[in-house]
Image (tube, rainbow, N blue to C red; front, side, top):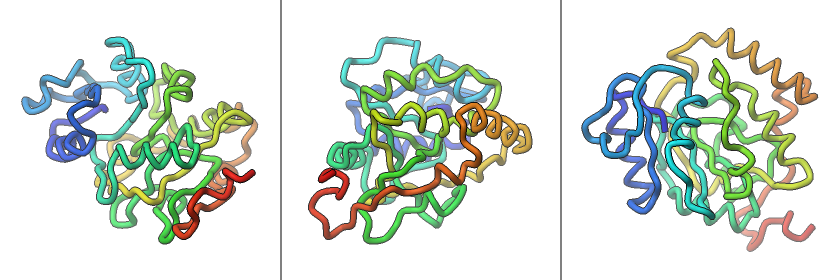
Length: 229
């Protein structure tokens, strides 16, 4: 996680939810919060992907570990990181995001948790505010591209990575609330340009092509419908 000192209380909520056994690695953008000092491995300005890579390279990752990349202004209001991972295992997802609460800040309705749905098999997992990857997908995902922007459009590259090999989706049974407004601390114009460039290189005409669901796992279904295919 890359955090700002002003969000220390929200970060602490998430750290309690993730549990004491997790390998927590934090980067402070502005100043190291005393409450988070023992888990903060670096400090300084910059873009999140580069800081994520610094945290990744700081020490070896235990074999078989699941990866969580998260913003500093998001936490669970239903479920937990453990519940999300368990649901991903049941759904066969290698990359996923928990559904978002409509009460927080969100990019579009695609990411909002659906009522009566446990999970959705999708073509897109947004890079934020929280991403989960199993060990196999994490090995391909890390290190992240060393870019000088916020990584908009990386979803197209993840889509190409998953084609024919992995299943990705949204875990609607778990829900997070995102307190921070999207693109509030940086200009959105250059990010849009970068996103269109990544989409073009991946052979995707529009991000809306990816924001689609292939199948729904409804609450009354014991197993996901795609497990029968």
